[in-house]
Length: 503
Image (cartoon, rainbow, N blue to C red; front, side, top):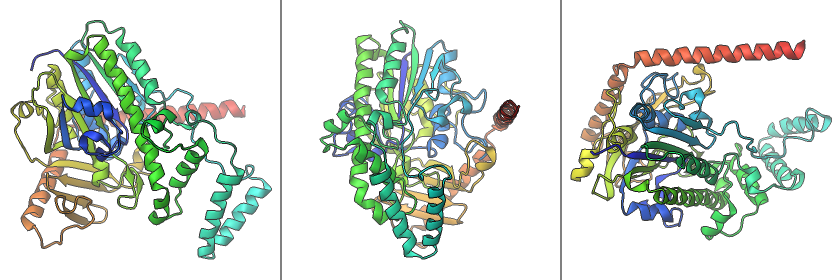
């Protein structure tokens, strides 16, 4: 393919595939991106290589399965080739503006290859206000409340009644007036990220560039700008009501049925976050067009994983599930050198995204990449049905410590019609027929579709064998050495602070 072409990669946290218009959603979440889809390749079944964020991005940027370097390695290894490092070495200007996701920080190696890297973790971002942790810290009222709670929870249903009364008291009586949506929001909104991107683009001149934006607006807690709610036609939701909904949705003492009464409003907040992203993507593209950069630009719009809204009784995006609402993401590629546009129904593993983008930009593809470019297939409109692999680890106790990442593996093998989910912790395999059961509610009986089950299990076995022999031992050692240095530096800093405060 001709090159060099500039590359813009936009990743949106928690954006599930079935909540964008160009993949069939009936609410107006993405009017601008929907229009862009008419001149782009749209992948109807793009599947992440892992979920959530920390298992997804090694594939997106480095074309590597997330557990290939071991369960205790998270993020990118020092010296690992990525889209950014390849394009930097090819003479590109490179920049990343990431809206405060701690797993996409320097701590995990994502600054590699970028001239400008801003993760916004140093910004003063207000945390979600969840009142009701007791009147005073350790005071008499707090101690009495804890004693009452312990007594009530020994009486069965009385404990549940106490939890509900206490939650409502904290939200409706003890809570201070809710600040604005902007004050409640945990992450910089998409307009802030796009402002920085546009300022950076103004200095690019005629050099080819790589720009990566990661937007957090659909991520919980859900506090979209009020303009986005109005654009969606959503009845007005006050800041106090939004705070109540987020606090309720985050409760750990309720079953799925209790959450269903709030689901519609929570999804409305989530959808408005997507709409705000769409408006800011439109503003970025307009800047590219005005600067005459758009015509020679490869553009990718996708997500790192989805979000669950009680689809299988859960919320958010836990690392112990590989259901479609979490692993199927939107993917739109605008590549000036590819004439084919429209939907691609075949499964597309995100392990292939980085080599496809590099080839489209006219840059070399590292031999260490596990995926391969699909550019030729897109040129020829060739169909395929190759399985996509998804893997993650359950029970991540503390991701910032290596010993907290050693839970059991869950792997999904996703074909166009069939999907295998193998849980190593439960020693359980399930096969779903997505044509008859797209919601994955009814795994096939063990004696049904045996050739399919055998084929999927063989693909799983092959993936595990490839992971053990992928030649990543040197990168693994570099990653572990980096981990040891970070832990040593943290321990030394804590010791120094302790000495300072005590003496």
